[in-house]
Amino acid sequence: MELYLGYPVFLWEGLINFSSVIFAGLIIAFITTFYLKKKDESTRVAGVILEKRVNAQHEILKFMEDSSQKFEMPQSYAVELKELMEDYNFVLPYNPQIQYADIFSSVEKYRTFFKEFEELFSKHKLWLDFKVRHKILLMQAYFSAINSSLIAFNRIPLPVGIVLNSKEMKNLSEKLLLILGVALDEEFNELLMELEVLMVNSIYKLDLSRPKNSFLYKYKENREFKKAEEFLVKKSLMGKYLPSIAILVINLVAIIKGVELTEEQSKEYLNRYLK
Image 1 (cartoon, helix red, strand yellow):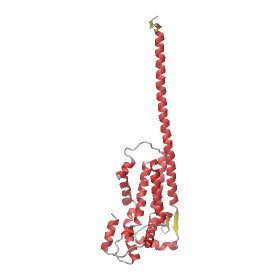
Image 2 (cartoon, one colour):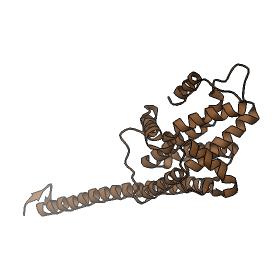
Image 3 (cartoon, helix red, strand yellow):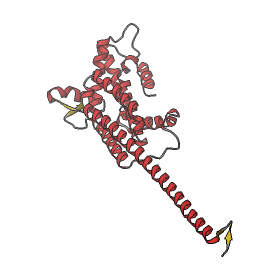
Image 4 (cartoon, one colour):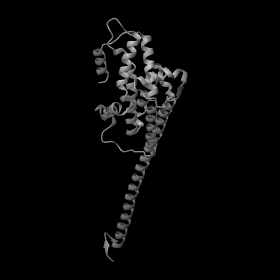
């Protein structure tokens, strides 16, 4: 019998084989435990993101649905407004009915809506996926353009000594806001429905991969803003109506102040407004 260090060789061989089995088992156990922990962590992170996303999107959608509550103007009051809109090439989506969301019924309601919309986006954008964030950014630019239109009356080059007082400014802004609410109601609904679809898809198709460039980087580089601006100016009804809005603003101010602007003044304002 062969001996090694006083012990039979077959005992050493058995010990080595037994150690190999134990070592291999430990490696397999370690790898399995590491893999399962990593998988569990990914599942836990996905669950947290999904919960945060569902809550964020529910709050945003509820806010938008509450803000899009509709009113229909009685026909007896709608005739004058309808004629004014048709004179300036605004199309009534539901002609002969005049329908609009409640937020377009007063400047205060609209500005409160716009402020809360921006605050909700800022509060929840961390949990929204890229497509939803982009759509909300686009809507933010859209609502901002409407808000900017409400102060367009202050930019009219009136003769020296003639100014709009606060009451006149408010009345003109609310008339324009109502016209925009009626003319843009169908597009407003489409934007809301598209946002809802994107939000649903972002939950059923949860993507945890990191983008090559962060959203903030793209925002700083104005890439997403330029896309929103392109939609606003070239594709949306709001962009289509910009010339009509500018002409309407000029004429409303001229009528309420009893002045007649020269052709040169009107062209100057149109050029500044449509830039």
